[in-house]
Length: 332
Ligand code: HEC
Ligand SMILES: [Cu+2]
Image 1 (cartoon, rainbow, N blue to C red):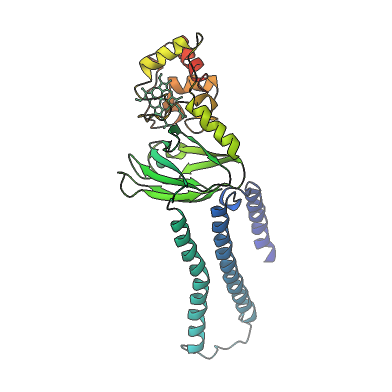
Image 2: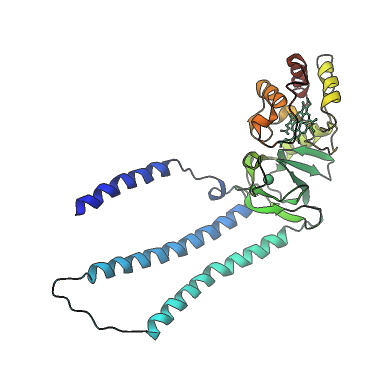
């Protein structure tokens, strides 16, 4: 008997272990800022309480099935109904456990909400989520950018979240929990995050928002203050058109400028491409190099399903696209 269940259990355990080796501790479990750290504490507290419950229940369960196994010669035991003591115990213990989890959770939730309100001197970045990309506006600095948002290390940044089409959700697991972006300008949500270390942190849309949802990625890039200041200066001094990029700039103006602003601080229907040459990714996830740019301009639908940019495969020649790529790669 024992052998048969062993035979089944061993491959199952082996498979689970194999699956687990694919896991690495990252995201919310590897916090890189004070908000995410506090939230991880809550996760660990809940996990601790739940583990305790699990262990107690399992121990009792196995103890009962082993200790009270039916043996030859057993008679039907005395039948009892109701026990005030037991019922009180299994009602009160869960209530106490719930309180242990609820009090710090509710307290932190209200605390974070309080902190998220920008006060004098706080840095503010407006986030507008769109199918299927992110626009970031720095009202103080006069910068508009997309997909990659730069912040200084060790400083609270208040993100003002909204959307222009459907509901999305702004999530940077390593820096803190997510928050919805609502449509219509009213009902703006606020989220204060801070990065304790320099680095590039992955961001995601966490609300199913259409075909391209799974690829609606962005990055938060945290830099030390002097480097961050240098980035701001760079963004405010746009690249100049040279003899080499002249043709590409003209083509861009004719075919792309209707949707893509280049001037710093200028909003547009599509992403503002000022500083595009320094973006790590195209459309939030595809590595930013010449080959991929050609692919994106020709058939963006292949890179991100449901994308709201038309393909130019049949509109521009390969030579023209190469000129545009050269121009885009000069936009530092
Ligand atoms: C009808 C409007 C429209 C036109 C015209 C258009 N685009 Fe776009 N473009 C978009 C939108 C919308 C996105 C965002 C796609 C996404 O990620 O969901 C985009 C994204 C991009 C990106 C990626 C930006 C980033 O931040 O990752 C590049 C590069 C780009 N377009 C280049 C071009 C070029 C070059 C042309 C002209 C040949 C062009 N686009 C024409 C709407 C347009
Ligand atoms: Cu989305």
